[in-house]
Length: 312
Image (cartoon, rainbow, N blue to C red; front, side):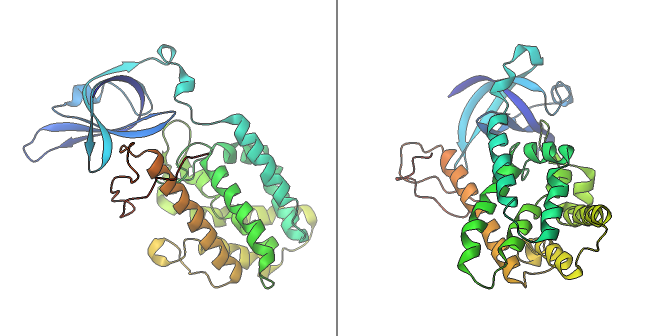
C-alpha cells in the first residue's frame, strides 16, 4: 500500500549493510503509536535533513516484515511545527491524567501508618514531582511506553493492591500500597518523556531502581526534618527492599529477590499489569485485522487469540 503521511521521528539510525550501502532505520510515531520505518540507499545528507523529535512527511509504502507492519520510505521531507496539527501527535491526555492523579491521592489517603502518611505527603505536596509523575512514561518500549504511562501503570497496580491486600491476613496492605507507589518512581529521572522517550545520562548510568532508592532516602530525610522524629529503620529497609526487588530476580535487573510477602505481591502485581498491557498492545496493533489470531510476535514468543477482544 502506498503511503504519504506526516509522522514524528521518534528515533533514527544510519547503518551500513554488508555490501557497504547505507540505510536509515526509523521509529515513526503519531497519536496512535509507533511504527518501524526503513529507508534504503540513504546517505548522510538525507540523515542530517531532520533530527529526532522533528515532524517529517514520509512518502513510500507499507509492508509486512516478521509479522509486523513497517514503512519502506522513499522520500523524507522535514516539516515545521506550524505545518502540522500537533494534537494528532500528542498521546498525553491531561484530563485523564488529572483523574488518575486524583485517584492515586485517594488511595494513598487510606494509609494508616503515620510515617507512611508523612512520606506520601512529601511526594504529593511537591508540585514539581507531581507534574513530572503525571507526564512520565513507564518505558522506552513494550508496556506503558507513552507520556502518562507511568501514572497509568502505577494506578493499575495500586488498584490491584487494594483488592489483594485485605485477602491475606499477614500482608501489610499499607506497606504494599506504598511500595507500589514507590517502585518505579526512579523512571521519572531515568527517562526523558518530552517528545521522544529516551534514557537520560543518569538513567543509563544508574537505572531506575538505584535512582528510586536515592529518591526515597531524600524524602525520608525530609520526613525526619519536618517531624523531628527518626524514621523507623525497619520500615525504611522494607521500603527499600520493595524497590530493589520488584523485578523479581537478578536476571531481570533486581539486585535482590523478593523475600517479604509485600515484595512478592508487588513483583507479581507489577508483572501482571506489564504483561497484560504488552499483550493488549500486540492485539491492538496487529496487522492481521480479519483473523481470530494475531501474527506470531517474537517479543512474546506466541500468537494471541483475539476473537473475543473488543477493547474498552
